Length: 337
Image 1 (cartoon, rainbow, N blue to C red):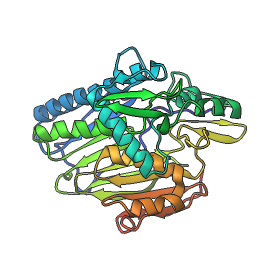
Image 2 (cartoon, rainbow, N blue to C red):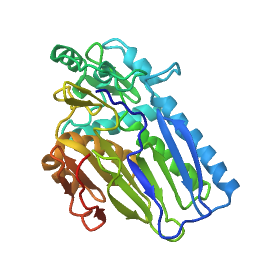
Image 3 (cartoon, rainbow, N blue to C red):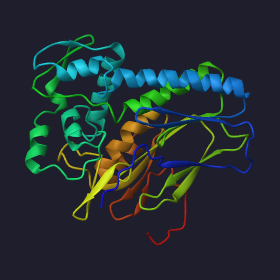
């Protein structure tokens, strides 16, 4: 059976005790997903103007980092370059690539920005859903065209690759960056209470009609909630799940979160939710911690200030970092459908 969903919202905004009549909501299609903007506490015209400007900023981030479509950018130039050919990257790309390498080190290689060839061959971001997994030989061929150690910054904003076929893919970090930039624009325009939700990647500002924003986290094997968090702060919540983009083949689930070490979908987790100060950090860590799994990932989370995580492992068991246990309201378990 093939099941394939695009832009699935993995976090749900639940109403707080008092529903504000001042909420303004708009949706846009950006970054390959449905982005929902929710603004509270300001007149409609102010909210709509802020949403329009934030959406434009986010679209700019997509244009800068996308590897799809016809819009030219320096990511595509680097991906098409020959081995040893210097490529001058746009400043924003140069900066994000350096940050990506730092996250690669921090996550013990679980987050890898050089998997462009492998991700393309799996096809989860294509126009047509994949239906058959790659063979081991195909995976090994693509893994040979990846590796952070094979790209080098030889001067400011200038990079080279050592091996033919290495392609950058910022899919697990650029969406978070876009959300942060959108929120930054809203804050510049005076917005104090809002949520930007890009297919389940959220940045949350302020509160909701003097009540916490109540954010529910989806159960990875049901259409209802695993539990919820009450949020009244500038923070981000991102969930990575094996149910977002996947297909079934001979009774096995193949999903879009690829383990850079094996080249196949990671098997340690069903979902991981991360709370972190920025959407970019939460975006990266939700992918990295999904791949690492609870046992390897927990020490990393506990070592990072203001970062928390919730895992649903491959056996459907729920694990939490120490700082989120008192905040997360786990709903009573139901029989899986």
